[in-house]
Length: 568
Image (cartoon, rainbow, N blue to C red; front, side):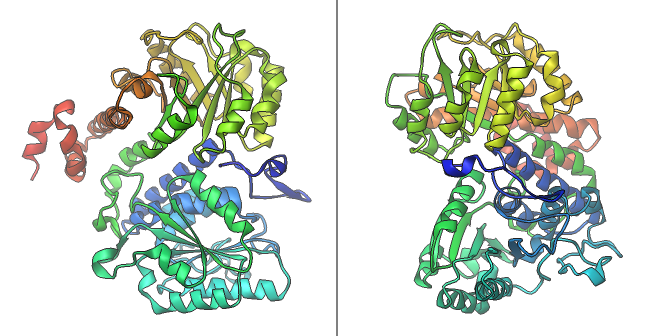
C-alpha cells in the first residue's frame, strides 16, 4: 500500500531540527505524482536548451528518484552534508538531467538553473560531480558521487554502507544502476561483496528499461532473468513496475524490514516514459528534442491522466474481484464511492469495508465521501488507509474543511473537495487551495444510479479549472458521473485529468476492452490538443514528423491522413 503501516502514519511528514526541515516520509500520492511530472518538465527544458543530454534515461528513472527523494530518503537540502542523511548514488550517471531536476525540485538549487545544463561554467555538466565545500562553484549540493564510467557506483555504495555499519550509523544507502551498465563485471564483484558483508542498509534499484546506448539490452547482452541472477548472488529481490510510485513505495518499505541481506529492486521501466514518441525508442538514449518543440512537450507532460474505475458500478459482485480485474488492466487508482443514505439517498459501504479492501491491492484508493458531517468520520477513513479523501463542499464549512485537510496532510493523504453540478466553488476554499490535490466536478447529481452525463457541466468545468489555477491550484480536476468513451474526450478538453468510470468499465462484459477504449479516447484527445498547440506556435509539420509513428493509429479520428501521408 502507498501509506506506511498505521503506527507510522501519525508520524510527521517532515522531521524538524531547529529551524531546518528534513525531507522524507509520508508525501501524499497525488503530490508525489505532481513532483514526478515537475522533474520531467525541468529535465526536458534543460536538455532542449543544451541541445544534448539523455532524455530516455532521465525519464525512465523519474519515478525511482522522485520516490526516494520526496517520500523515502532522509536528507536536508539546507545541509547537504548532514551526517544523518541517507545516501543516493546515481551509478547510471548519464541520467544527469533527471537527477539534477530531482535535486532542484527537492530544493537543493533553483530549478531555473537547469537551463544552464552542459554550458561552460555551469555546475550542471553532462555527468554529475560530487559536491564539496571548496568547489562550490563547480559542484552541486546533494551530489554524492562523480559519475561517468559505467559500473562503478554500486562499489561506491557498498563502501559507504560498509563504513556506516562499522561506525554504528543508521544511514541507508540507495544506488540506482542501469541495465546496460550491468554488463560491467564490477557490478557483480560489488554484488558479491555486499552479500558477504550482509549490508542490509544497502538498497540498489535496477532501472530495467531494456535499452542501452547501442540498442536493446537483450540483443546486445541479455540480462534476463535479472531477478533470479540477483537472488543467486544472495540479495533479497523485489520486482515492481518502476513507473508506479505505489509499488516503489511498497518495495522500499519492505526493504527497510530486510535483515542481513542487501536489497535489489528490479524496477521495470520504459525508456523515455512520459513523451510518447520517445518511449521505448533507442534513438532517444542521448538525443535532445528540438528547442522549438519544448512548449508542446511540456503540455504533454502536464496532460498526464488517470483512469479510476468505481467499484460500486455494474453487477453486485465481489469488490475484491472487481479490484483485481482492473488492476490487471493497469488502471491508475480505484475509486470508492462512499454513501451514507443521508447526504445522498443511497447507501454503499463505509470505512470498515475500505479497510478490508486495503489488503487486496497496492493501487491508490480514491475515496469520495458523500456523507453528512465528514469531519466526524474523517479519522475512520484515514485509519482505513485511503490515499485520496474527497469531501463535499455542501457537507462542510471552511473551518471543518480546514480541519479535514490538516488531518489528511498530517497522515500523508491527498485531500480533495467535490462540488455538485449546481454548486459553485466556495470562496472560502481559495486561501487553502495550494494544499488541495483534487477537485471533483460532479457531472451527475450524486447518489442516484443510472443518470446520464450532464453536458451543461462542461463550461463550468472549464471556468472552475481556470479560476482554481489563478488561485494557485496545482492538483487535478476529477470528472465523476456518466464518464464513458463518448464523454471522456469532452471532460478531457474541459480540463479533467482523473476520470471516474463506473458502468463504462464494470457494465461492460469485457473489462479489458472497456479500459482500452477509455485509454484510446484519452490518447486521441491528447494528440488533438498537442496538434492544436503545435499549430498555434507554427511547428505543426515539424511536430507531426517527429510524432508520425504515434499519430498513425489516430489519423482517421484526427482527420490527418493526407498530412501524414505527405510527410517523408
